Image (cartoon, rainbow, N blue to C red; front, side):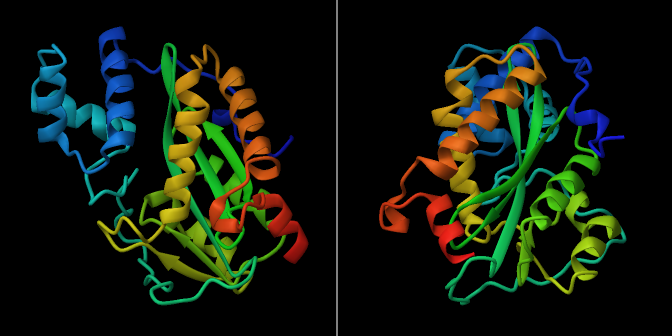
Length: 253
């Protein structure tokens, strides 16, 4: 009735052993530090830490987490077969105003006894986080929830994403094209195509997620919400001439 997907509110058991969850926590931290690590290097690193793991196991966990070495961009999902892939429209484009370009991405959020997935929509010029949603699955609903929430604020000229099935789906691209928004998608293995939201994930994890040990999805949602309010309204950025994202977005939006 509220228009919010069930997966963003109801926690379900993740079906992984405590040992695998511990490995995933370690892999998440290491991947944030060195996102160019693929399964081979991640396996070798875990063995150095004293964990007897094989590459097949590490590859499965990395796939579950939605990470792979792509020089060094994390790619949380592959394009859905049969869906249209759009060109990358931002190469060489000067970003000069708010609502010129928005972008979105998904990242893995660790918890004490499980994990969740976070999606956010960001304005490139101001770095303002327009919307976000948390889910215990990678289904489309929470991405549409974040998109529709962002679109209630305004309309970008270009919307950029990766080639994951959530973003290449007819429902997602249809929402954009129906509003005459140009759809742009990262090239495979291109770490700089969505660089601003990649930096957001790194800041979020080091300044919030890794300092906490969320026991429930509701606790994760509260903590992440609190962080994004801080990020938007209090955290000054050198790239914005030491202004906050909110002050830039709201002044020029």
